[in-house]
Length: 617
Ligand code: HEM
Image 1 (cartoon, rainbow, N blue to C red):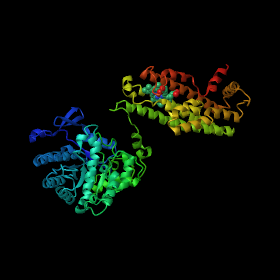
Image 2 (image 1 turned 90 degrees about the vertical axis):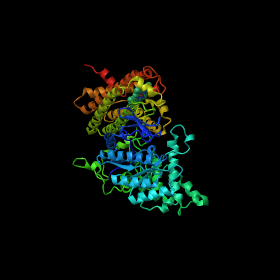
Image 3 (image 1 turned 90 degrees about the horizontal axis):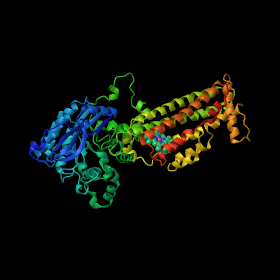
Image 4 (image 1 turned 180 degrees about the vertical axis):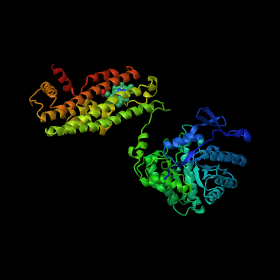
């Protein structure tokens, strides 16, 4: 099943000077600002930053591959609709961009399809241009949700929609020319507030006017941006319809009965909103639509649907199956890229894939820089920390297994297998930690000035709050109850650390096992110091009889190495801290590197080091 994005936009690299062509001002034009980047201007006013994906099929296809999108449906941008211009200008403009869309699709290796635009202020001209475009290969049309004061229930627009049904053209309704703009001069509110309301208005106008009764059921019509606020406010509409005759309009059925007459796209950007949309509309009425490649579009096309908890079938419907019907693509469907790619085994349907197994889309969604505009290096900062946390997870996983093996070794002095296994896993832990020490160098490619540019956004987040780091310390035997205070805001982490605090540590279990197999002798009445010395002597005894204790010595060596590497980690971390923030305070409120230096003397397994002092030649 190909993945199809039904809502994306394009701009040609260049187009004629429309103001000069028509002799009227304030037409959109493109100002290339630097390689791969441009601004859309309307007259002398800035409208939007865009980048080369708008006009360069190579860039677009690469990003489609990255996002695993097989087909993208491109349409021009509402700013080009020209519904308020003389018909001959609007028609000429529509033709220009419709032909440009066909040209772009021709370079799209069969993966780009187009929706045309029409001069909707003149239904006859609009119908003719639609028919011309359908013959040229367009799959349908993108229209605005209103023409001046006329909503979608306008008789002329209904005539046009009827024609679309006859031509088998898909209709994408896009909000535009938002009302109330004098009250929304700032913060992009026309886009965030006006657009959803415009779309809602379009849908409600069609339902209450009885337009769906007049139009054939074969009309395939979809509203962008999840239908705006429609799904969320359907209850309100329904309530008004039931209880107020004026709100009844001309529809025969309650408004909720018309949701099967139109579709919406998935551009709602929030998993809860998507769930609700699917609940309201039904999965068969929702299609992947991204608004790509505009700044307010979905950053990784399809990730909202893919990472949702909806059923596999619903996801498949939304990612492609519904769009195939909507665009009438079934006959001419290009092969999904996954199937056309060469290779002996191609996963089919719901089979496990590299991505689904590793949850790659979910993983790639987990980086959320705080700087705005985003500082280039913040992504590195996040990824390096996330990588550390992943390795901390693996370390905890392996060290827990080491503890289990040492416990088992203590329970049966006959078998050496568990001791061997503990040593083997510890070897892995030391190798991981070696990588963790090295990894700081990547972060050191970040200039101190670059870090300071976004550091302020991080407070009070700090490595102090790394639950897993503290767990590792507690698990290995360095237990400091005071550190729990940093985890008060996260009760689960707090509870987990409390559990680690109570449980015997790796150090306890190691010596417990030696004691259980008779290699450590320490009185219950022994003082702390006597106990320490007895443990160090037990280690010494292991080394002195190498032949009998090979596996145990191996465990001791790996534990020592691990200890050593954690100190290296602390040292490299301090060096990094000083390199990046000098002697400044930490975001967690500590004095910074001077505090961290106090941790350098910490050891997980001091007896193993003491045993070395006790050795004699
Ligand atoms: C620019 C990079 C970094 C800076 C400037 C930095 C700075 C600091 C500072 C100043 C502290 C002391 C606590 C505080 O007051 O915040 C700290 C603690 C800590 N940092 Fe970093 N850090 C950096 C990178 C990292 C990385 C990549 C990790 C990897 C996990 C990390 C893990 C930790 C941990 C676990 C602690 C607690 C250490 C302890 O209590 O012994 N830090 N960091």
